[in-house]
Length: 160
Image (cartoon, rainbow, N blue to C red; front, side):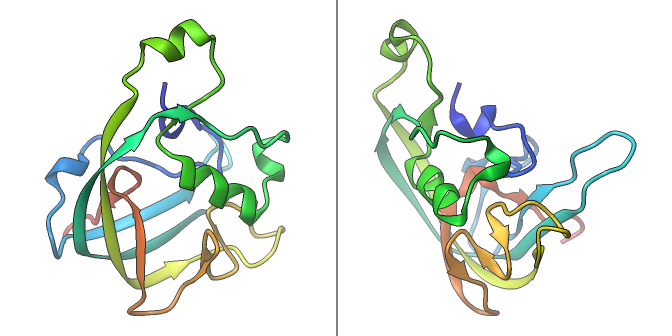
């Protein structure tokens, strides 16, 4: 029921079941990707590639996700950043369900050393998501930059 698992639209980050966060190690090649939805005509997949420069485990309070008040396709960069900062979080659910969830959860955070990326540059190229116009959320992408993110949002690079 965590928001990261429930967000199934194009703007949500992909988490890989084959690369659990607990298996991440320093130096691992990782990819954050979004898009690729569709059965017949696939939407483009945009991505950020790098290597893990630092790992840390944190205890976070599990709360409800922020209410943005518009469809995910209409989210702005600030809306995506607000949701990402709140994760892990619980989508609006009956209080009885929220009350049964653990109040504190452990998350693995990583610092990714950016090496390459492909982002949409206009609305014609793709819906603004976590990756848009050379940025990850509100941080400009640069080769060698460090980006802090949840390890669950990442996949391991294939063949590396």
